[in-house]
Image 1 (cartoon, rainbow, N blue to C red):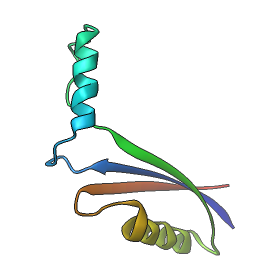
Image 2: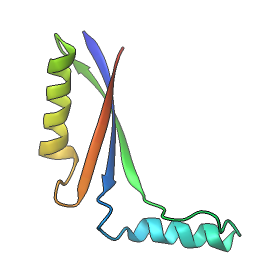
Image 3: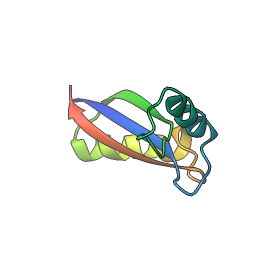
Length: 83
């Protein structure tokens, strides 16, 4: 069965996000002062062939842990949908 994985990878909250800080400053320069705590992350979409949803989840989790996310600095979450 085909599954679609929607993965979100974000820098851990305790780690400085200079790109997010730059975007926040830019938004404040545009007089959008009500916006705060901007964090920039990655969104990855994968198609996965697996016999079961459990197998697809294990495959996506392994991909995140072994390659897609730097677990020292980042955390990840994902959702699976049938294709």
